[in-house]
Every structure is written in structure tokens, then in C-alpha cells.
Image 1 (cartoon, rainbow, N blue to C red):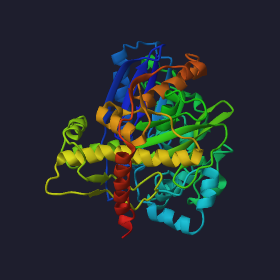
Image 2: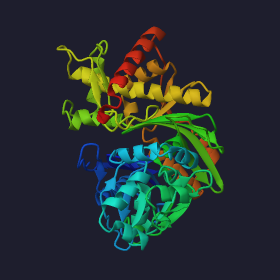
Image 3: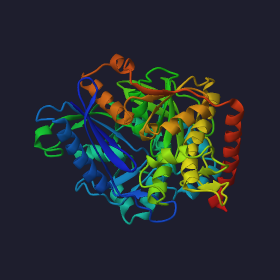
Length: 495
């Protein structure tokens, strides 16, 4: 049995996989979101650990895993979110700053104006944006009393969520190469924390950062009682950030293969092989995974708000009780009647990279209803994916032949059909929606010999396929109007 921990932005899912890589146990819980100021998003790392441990135990129980049955643990996680804790007590020293947090947007502007984006891009493959971890760490060092001194003398350490969970599970301070590549402090070509970037972002002490290991290998073994006495000593043997784990779980092991994961945000990744891809403005070069001495890279487009927009309809506007209602509401209309929602609730990601964009609804009339808002939210998920995919096609010189899709929103049949219509290519939906968890399990399983790389590449996991059925003129009109709406949302918070 392999336990996969999928620690996401709004909740933690744990799945248990058997020797056939079939899910035989699962559990899920949400946790609280904290919004102390407009544009600020935080999590309680202690709560994340408590929820993760409880969900892991529930999943193991659901699968009937007995003492000695658990072979390995894989972890996949929300990326870029920064935790800081005391390595002796294991207690957080501040709330985690979430990838959605925009408090360092002005700092990124300052660095960009000073001409630093070129070196950031060259070493990390990323763009200067508050989305990534570096300016979050710098903010913590500058704004939490005594933290810089603690970090300098070993009383405070930083890490992305995977590192936090590894520490709580094993006592080790380690991360994998995919998560390190999302910090904006890591040289993705040399595979090391970069001295120039550490200095640029407020002199981050390298000793306060985790040891970086390949994605497949041993990160530590469960310490006494971490998941109950019966599983002590089980290795954590596979780690990848959620999007890289989904790429692996989709079997995209060859250059040119790609996928989109529809989660809190949506992320399109294309395998680029062992060569770092050249990413134009709006796209990212990132690490796909590390295996031994080999590093595999990917081209990435990041969309910040997709599923989170539906969650906002439920929790913020309270116009739906559950996400599934959006499908019926969208189907109740013959068209969008000119209503568009740009869900720039935390700025816009690829290919726009505008941290000052804000959520905008256009085209409302007296006849507009909650169905229009719900449909516009689903359409926005598809439109943002079109923007990202088209930018990636230009960058790679390859036209998309199909889009492999996974994530919770793939259960929405109306959305998947609309996505196929907007892209003009088939959508192949993964058999298991939680492909991020599957990828973590496969990584961990390969490490302990449960499967081989060939086994991963040859898996057949397609659950549904959606063929495009819209004519080109209608598609072009809808996308054109969407882009007019995006123009309205751009730069709004800048004034």
C-alpha cells in the first residue's frame, strides 16, 4: 500500500493506492482561509498539519491498512506557500503566506524597476511576481520581530508546504527539486540555492532553507507516532509540487506531452525533457521532477483563480450551496447573454502576469441572474485556459492536439464540453480526478520498487473524452469579448 498526501490550498486529500495503483481508501477535509487584509491570504500551518494527520489516518483506516502494510508515502502540495517554524519545538512562528498572497506586489515592482528581473529569470526560470516564495520569505524576515536573528542562528527555518509536512512526519528539513524551483531562490540549471538570489531577496540565510533532493528517493522515515505506532519507520519516498505530480500522474513522461489540472487554480504543463525550455513573457520554465542525477524540465502556464472562483460563489456571494450546482445553472441558459466574469481575485497569472488586476464582472443587465454569474465563472475557467494554451503553443512551436485534464472541475461535464469548444481540440479527462495524488503515489512507488518508469508511462487512465462542436466564428466572438473584459480588469488596483 502507498499513502499519497495531497495538501491543497483549501483542503487536504489523502488516498491509499494498492499494487495496481488503484485508489482503495480516501479521506478529505477543508481548513480555514485567513484574509487579514485585502490581497493578503494566509494559512495556519499547525492546522494544516492537524488536518493532514487526521485525514491520513482516516484514509489508512478506510483502506484497511494494517501494521506493516504501508510501504511508502508520497507528498504533493500547494506550491510557493511559505511556512516558517522553530526546528526545535516544531511550532510555526507566523501564519503561512499562501501562493495567492499579493502583499509583496510593490516590492516586486521595485526589483523590476531596478533591473533585477533578468537575473531572476535566468537563474530561476520564473518571473518577478508575489506569487512565488522569495518575496514572502523576505517579508517575513523584515516584518516578524526577531525572525531574522532566529533564522541566522538556527532557531527558525523556512520551507514550502512539503517541507513542513516532511518535518512533522520525519523530523528532517528537506524538500524536493520541484518545490525548490518555485521559490525564486533556486538555480534550476545547477540545482542549488543561488547565492545571488538569496542576497537579492533580503539576504535569506541558506542554512534556514531545506536540503534539496530529487523527487524520487528517501526524504526520511516516519518518526515515532507520526501516523500511529504501526507505521513507524515507513519512508517518505516521493515528493513533487501538485502540478508536477499531476504531469507525472498523467503519464506525460516524454517531451511534448502536457496536461491541465483544474483545481483552486489551473496549471498547464508541457514536458520539455532534460533541457531547460526558453519561456517567453507570461510563461515559466520550471522543474518537472528529478530522478537520480537526471532533472526533467517543463514549460508552465499558471492561472491563479479557477476552482477558487466557484468557491467564492459558494462562500463569498453565497449564491450556491455546492460547486455541482454550477453545471445545472450554466445549462439553464442558451448563452452567456454577454455576461463575463474575470476572476482576477488575486491578480492575473499566465500569460498576463498582472498582480494589480482585480475581479471584474461586465455585461450585467436587469435580466441577469445568479445563473449568469455561475455560467460566467465556468466560462472564465475555460477562457483562461485558452489564453494559457495559446501562449504555450506560440512558445513551443507545437499546436495542441488534445488536452489531458484532471482535477475536481473535470466532474463538471458542461465545463469540459465548453473547454473543448473553446480550444477546438478534444479534452481527455483522467480516470482519477485526483491525479496529483496519483502522481505522488507513483513517485513514491517507483522509489521503493513497487512500479517502474515504464509502468507509469504505459498506464491507460482516460475516463471521458469531449470533442469540440462549436463553429470557429462563434468561438472567436466569445474569446474576443472575453479579452475585452480582461482589458477592463487589468491594473485596477494600481489606480
